Length: 243
Image 1 (cartoon, rainbow, N blue to C red):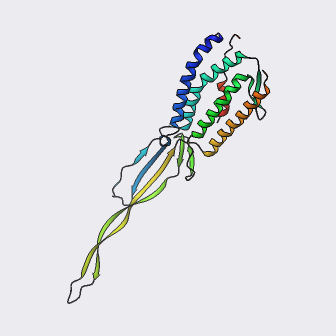
Image 2: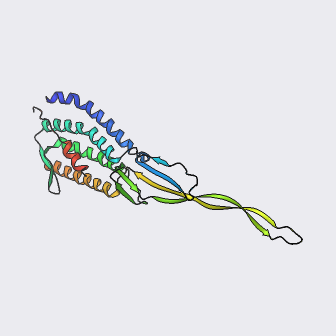
C-alpha cells in the first residue's frame, strides 16, 4: 500500500474506531448490566409454601467489554503506526521497567500514543469495580465473581387467642385475638458480578501510567516511504490488559 492510499482511508477508520470505543465506554456506565443474583427459598415446615426462585443473569462481563474496546481500537492503532513510521526516521524505543514495549518508534506515533493513553486511562477508570462491602470469589463455572449464600428469614403473621382475664363465677373469661410474627422459611441469596476487583483496576491504571511516562520519555529522546504494514496494537493492548 502507498502512503497516500493509507492517508485516504485512515480518517474513516479513525471515526469508526472512535464510535465503537465510545460504545464500549458507555457500557461501563451501566453497572446494573454487570450484576446478577440467584435467590431461592426453603420453607421451615415440610408442607410450607415454596416461594418462586429469583434469578438475574450477568448481562455483561468486564473482560468482554475490554475485548470489545481493544477490537475497536486495533485497526486504528495499526494504521496510524503504519503512517507515522513511514513519515519520519525520528525514532526512540518505549521502555517500561527495562522491557521494550515498542522499538524505534517515530515521533508522530509517540505523540499519538500520548493522547490515546489518556483516553485509555479514562476507559480503565470507568470499568466497574467489585463492591468492597461484600466478600467476592471468582467462579470459573459462571465466569464471574460470586458472593457466599446469605440466609435471611421469611416471617408471617399468625393470630392466636390471648386470655386477658380468667373466667370467674360472676364473669366469663375475657379473650382477645393477638397477632404474632413467626418464621415461615429462609431465603438464600447469592449475588453475581461481572466487574473486576479494585486491585486489578489499580494494576491496569498503573500500567497505563507507566506506559505514558515511557512514551513521553521516548518522545523527548527522539530527534527525529513505501509503507511497511505495522502491527503495534497487539503490543500495546497485550501489555495493558494482560491477565
